[in-house]
Length: 417
Image 1 (cartoon, rainbow, N blue to C red):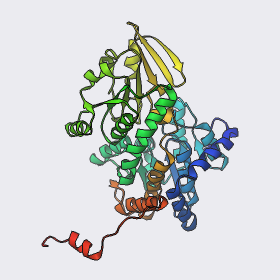
Image 2 (image 1 turned 135 degrees about the vertical axis):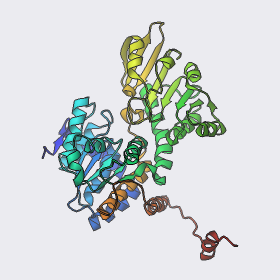
Image 3 (image 1 turned 90 degrees about the vertical axis):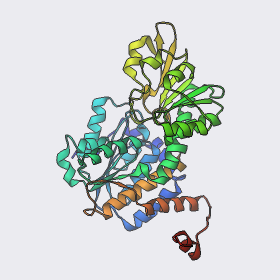
Image 4 (image 1 turned 30 degrees about the vertical axis):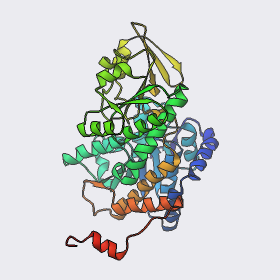
């Protein structure tokens, strides 16, 4: 068993605790679930591992799981999104924490392996790195895992590939696909936090600029919506014809990426795919173009090709790298091409993640309660979990809604009337 923590500086803990306490005060759904967990102890003695963007909201999720009796080990899911003061605050409580900001590739991998050294029985993943290791070099540990949950679109895609091939070694719940996750987290959370990250990093105005949104899934929808609200002209690029029509009817200009490259001021990738912006696009971009990524991995903007085209590169400002081309044009890359809302910001608002992490907590409880009953497959989050989180959120907002009468319920189920 490794040491219980590997963090930059344990003395940063008081500042991290203030951050955690702040988000706790704005996460009423998760607070209600924490009270239940403290009373019922559903995870008593269970070993739970989390690989997740280690900032205040995720730290509070880890504390809620721990409040349910679990022995928790946590690491980051991105080298730039870990906040050292928050990691220190968790470590100060005795939690197993292995993460620090700006970990290099080797350190990041070691942190993941240290978490797996705790022999987890439930995994909560964000992007699929823990699950990948449990299906490769730590495959021997897979029989100990009773199941897990995946937070992101990217991670669910990786799980879907494993599931199609019949290679999943334990059951997983697709938390990302729960309504109370993707409808709010992916759309409103990503939309707001991406632009917050871009604006605080660049200190440039959005109004009047042309924003190019690459991908019109739920994250892309949110990014485009917020760009429009901030006064930008919005171009959407898509590969899916249905989503392209949807973007057009939502009021955005739709064109292929080669056309968009010449006219954009700010480019945001949100596809989950690789090489979305590449050499042919960089060659057409105007001087001063800003590039940001909102996808989980830093492969959507082809950084090697961008660097290869530059005759000079320098840090222009914190979290902004300037690439100067042979013709004098400069292109600016934010946060090393990693997801800009967390690598250059605080991530989604607490009130949004309140729902997402409530889903995570209840999904983990579902895994524990159904240990041995589930097949080695990818499962949707049960509808009753989604609905319970929705009702808890409504209650926290002092909103009451109607209920169907018995007659209405019967009518909705009738085909003859």
